[in-house]
Length: 147
Image 1 (cartoon, helix red, strand yellow):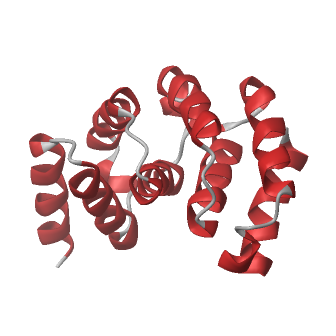
Image 2 (cartoon, one colour):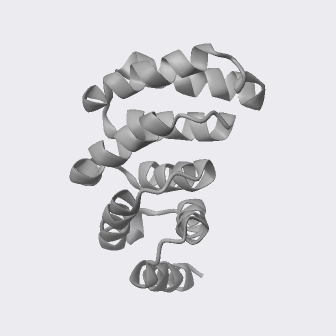
Image 3 (cartoon, one colour):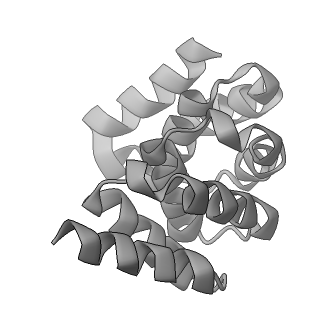
């Protein structure tokens, strides 16, 4: 699973959006989806980030991660949570249960988020149309506290 996540991340990191039309990415997305239960939290976050960044439609992969991640959300670090919701919002894939799990976990661990992670999280929730008033208030309070 680690090799699959690494492959997705590196292909996009070095190939950018120009790889979006490469049919091999569809095969990579399917291979990731088939083994998603073996991915760790960083692997899941990096994989959805990669496909969203490339602009590659990988809906079944995103849906698999949306189902796999919520019960394991405590394994995600702040960057992983922020990157995951950013990727889902960027890809336009609805995942209310995942967003709610991340909102709950992020609220509990808001002091671990850096300013970029807080900004990306707020943007993702707003873009996805997922209400998270308590989380937004906590982020605003945390940002003010750091000023």
